[in-house]
Amino acid sequence: MTWTREQIHVTTASYLGWTLDAFDFFLMVFILKDIAAEFHAPLPSVALAITLTLAMRPVGALIFGRLADRFGRRPTMMANILCYAVLELLSGFSPSLATLIVLRALFGIAMGGEWGVGSALTMETVPARSRGFVSGLLQAGYPTGFLLASLVFGLFYSHIGWRGMFFVGILPALLVIYVRSHVPESPAWKQMASQPRPSRLAGLRQQWKLALYAVVLMTAFNFFSHGTQDLYPTFLRVQHGFDAHTVSLVTIVLNIGAIVGGLACGTLSERIGRRWTIFGAALFALPVLPLWAYSHSAAALAAGAFLMQLSVQGAWGVIPVHLNEISPPALRATFPGLVYQLGNLLASVNATMQASLATSRGNDYAFAMAVVAGTVAVVIAGLILFSREHRGVDMGVQAPLAPASGGGVHPALAHR
Image (spheres, rainbow, N blue to C red):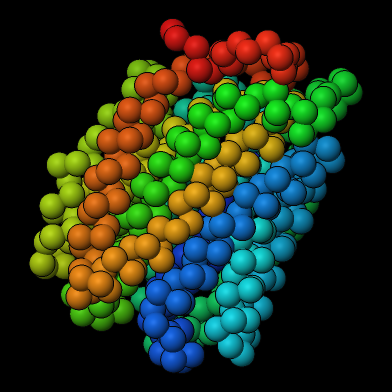
């Protein structure tokens, strides 16, 4: 199917928006050790900054999602990108750990809005038969951002230090220029804007069963991704004593696996379905666990990391399209992002929990990561079977919401 120029620009902008958002987030995970040393704080205390970043993301999803549903996806995306880029820059000027933690919490609000707004704009714009591939592409923006952060850490950290890593994070602000000049508004939003719509609160209240299920699912998904990514550089530096160059190379390989997994599984989901693709990708993590967590050489760890992220981001690659397809149309910029980020909130304890568990066992990060990854892989495989396919649904149609008192099961949770 031929794409229009506008569809290409929308997909490019949304991919870059999530890529650069993740880039700004992951710059932090490489420098926890350095921040702890400068502010004379234990590592778990510094990891609290990651916890608060994740915990505040639902606030951003709600704020920016509501703005996008009311005023449009395009202007909201521009404001969102500018916010997270400026807060990243300010983080580099932090005079104390307390200030840095506050700034990272505010960064979490800005970060929390981008995914829902960008995915809604894209899924409402691209051809229906391309959604699976585009879903994988959008989600691949997350490991691409991690990959870029890995490159910056490996190439520039020794020259610019940990504060300089944050200063580099202002670069995403340039994306606003591209969005303003090339990205059109979502045609589905323009179509629905002229139709009467329920209040966001009423809509979410009426869809509480679907929302509860989606939040639980996304909690497991966020433990899956953050539990295998956020402390992996620390695991390599502290438990194995690798230098910055080696850590950078391993994480580059890790993120290549993530990108390949997202693209492959997103595309595969158009053939075998969203549910079964997620099911298979999640369970693939189990045989990979020993190689990923308990290898000793950098080469073996890199191979394990590649395969683990093939699994993790393979499952994640289906999520943007799946959440948008089961979302109530009037809440599409709010619902997917909000349930995703509420899952982030519930999983935000991961970094602190894993760091504390590892420290209590003599810096055994391998054990802490393996427990989380193995558990949630099984949970995701079980939960996804309760969902249903909505492939190819018309995203421009304003379907009526279920009555609040009807007690019926939302179609997304109905049996096939």
